[in-house]
Image 1 (tube, protein in one colour):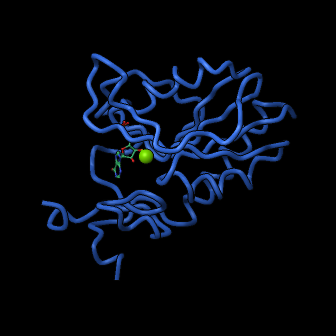
Image 2 (cartoon, rainbow, N blue to C red):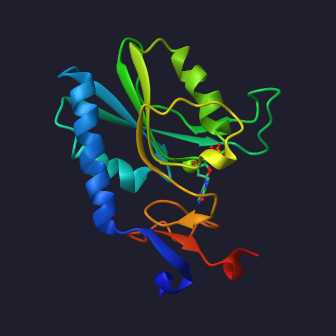
Length: 179
Ligand code: IMP
Ligand code: MG
């Protein structure tokens, strides 16, 4: 039923599982046994986060954060609002932020410096998807899943109007659904 609204599938559940495995190994190697606080960005990154953390063979804690980036502009960071903050202090910790997709880069360009001011020992970013054609704000992605074309994607956490997050694959939404 939900699948009928896709123009095509970009990544199957198997592709996504393989990607989480690859990134999990890269991440475990990068931290070399040091404890990591993995921070999942609500709500889009939750499914990827759940798969990724199970592939990171290292001491690890979870936390979650919500941010909304309504009306982004280059001028100020006021347009990124924290809708749910971390439960614990990250000072002195190795923090790995886990995001679904970096699109314009606005959210993370403003959020990463805000987290850096809390004094983590390190702060790195893992993003499942990167849409480089749409980038307006510079963001350094330390661990990247896939680079995707400039199309509207749904599934595996990504939504359109709150729906389609529960698809196990990622696909391009049919234009007739959103125009
Ligand atoms: P940015 O601040 O423009 O980088 O936006 C990042 C956020 O926009 C992501 O965390 C997603 O929630 C959302 N987003 C960007 N591209 C897509 C897409 O193709 N489908 C669904 N959500 C998207
Ligand atoms: Mg998001």
